[in-house]
Amino acid sequence: MGVVLFLLLLGLPIIEIVVFVQAGATIGWLNVILATIFTALAGTAIIRWQGFAALQNLRDAMGSGKAPVEPVVDGVFLLVTAPLMMTPGFVTDAIGFLLLVPPVRHSIARMALSRLKQAMDKGQVTIIRP
Image 1: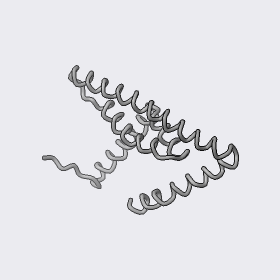
Image 2 (image 1 turned 30 degrees about the vertical axis):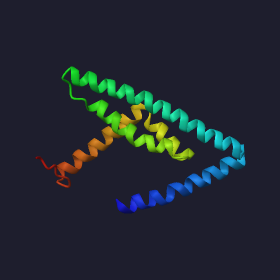
Image 3 (image 1 turned 135 degrees about the horizontal axis):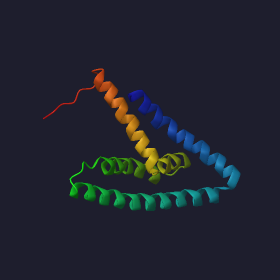
């Protein structure tokens, strides 16, 4: 896991620089800067809107006595998405915008939960209870 994180932290900036240079050569440096600012502003507005919606869904679920699983998952993904959207770059923005699509993040959450369950069934992960 540490190697993957290291390669991601090293590789992502390099990929962003390559994309910036190619985009600058294609559409011009000023358009690249304007597009970067626009995606950051648009992403921030969408995160804020979806964050308030997730908070309202959390309140509704808790008020009705239901387990607030979906609003919590949405909140966690929005916390992950925010730094991606604030980081200048088209690749991080693309990943961030993908995570802003509820069906995409719910699919990722289901996949992660399935893998966690498989690891627990194999005895690779144990849950410590207080």
